[in-house]
Image (cartoon, rainbow, N blue to C red):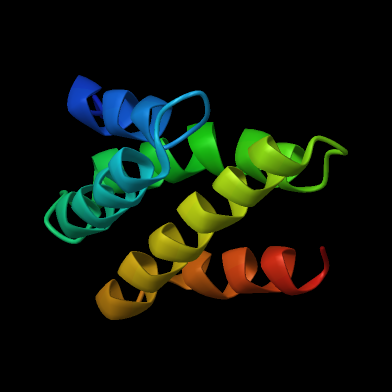
Length: 99
């Protein structure tokens, strides 16, 4: 079964990255986490699989602004996944700690 991920999740994730203003990025991350909490399990798993690896790669990158924004997004996603009790939360937290 292919689960479709709502486009607005990807749009919010793009807004949460540079070159957008810090306040807008923060608001986008907060809204993204709130919406992740409400996603069906199938589309949530697909979203996590598509977004977390590139964000972890950006977080480990040399460009400070991109790395900081990626870490912010990953932190909010981890929080949302922890609230849901999802196994991906532990993997994400481990990825963040290993940065």
